[in-house]
Length: 481
Image 1 (cartoon, rainbow, N blue to C red):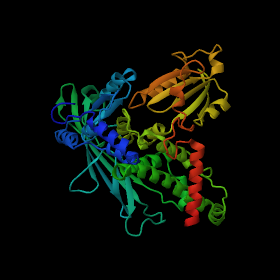
Image 2 (cartoon, rainbow, N blue to C red):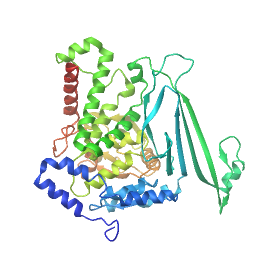
Image 3 (cartoon, helix red, strand yellow):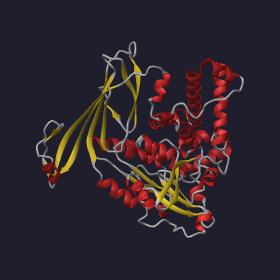
């Protein structure tokens, strides 16, 4: 929109670029400013739409700066989705729009969180609207099955006890309206029983039902910190960290967000080593001894350092303001605030698997580096970056009789199609024949390699140097304790 109320244009980006040109040291502050709306017009518009039960989706095709930071609140404030396509020629808008409109949606939603007296919900994350009078009650105009929300909890009173008689418990009540086809409603038995549905009025070929789902779960209390580590879900931990980093970056700047992320990993690894190694590790750390940074003794957290590295390496925490970089950052914020943990983990740190042929998978996971590709010795590699999929055929295999791209009915193609079908956003699939095609789409997903242009970030030099800085930080942290 470039006319009338709510008009946007290139002036904002041009003004900030001029500011960076004269004061390069302010690049982080300028990039942070471009993450925030220019004014509250579209947020207010979204809130007014939500008040009438209207959900607004936004599809944006890039190519130039669009100021999505100002437009995005229209979608998030009304329970809608933002779809962004940086390259018009590679846009999957028709597929995404069809999938989105044909998916089941919950409307006029309310979410209530209750806990046992030992603890309480203290903060929420995701596209939730808190009630202005009642604590722990939230609203959403609409949500999909994949929409995800997170909460922080804090102790009340004396905290948890180890007694088995009354373990801590949490209850979540989710109430929503759903449009159910009359045929489906009849197949389900018509009038509801004890499942929480209320019969609703017929509306054309559908019936409006108000439903209530209640989940009550008792929680085991960890014996010690090591037990807590072993019961954690690395993807959920990374997703909650990402929520906190986004909030910190918006409030204190991207530079502070990067610093807090790096320090968080340093502190986590420090305490893990202190718990598993005790005084021996403390003495070794002060004299330059080994640091277990990969959580080899705790497989549940093994993926966490690489996911945090991916977060620091991502567009989300970069100071880039050229072209559509600010819009890409806004889109990442929107996605990471609503994706399930394992999808968010894949968006931050891709997964590479190797295939012996188009019909047989070799290994499910490799490091994201050229050295890992060379050492594997397999002809085909599939890298899943959530928004993009790259299929790479090694130069030696591309000169042979291996069919490439893989045939449509091959096992590899079926796997790719299954990945695409299960996504909120259909990923762009690119096939790269080694030694023939431009390797950029494949190499862009090899995050463990150094960035082509060093911009001063702690993760820009590659995964190895990044871990060196983390280990150095752990030693310093333990020494200063």
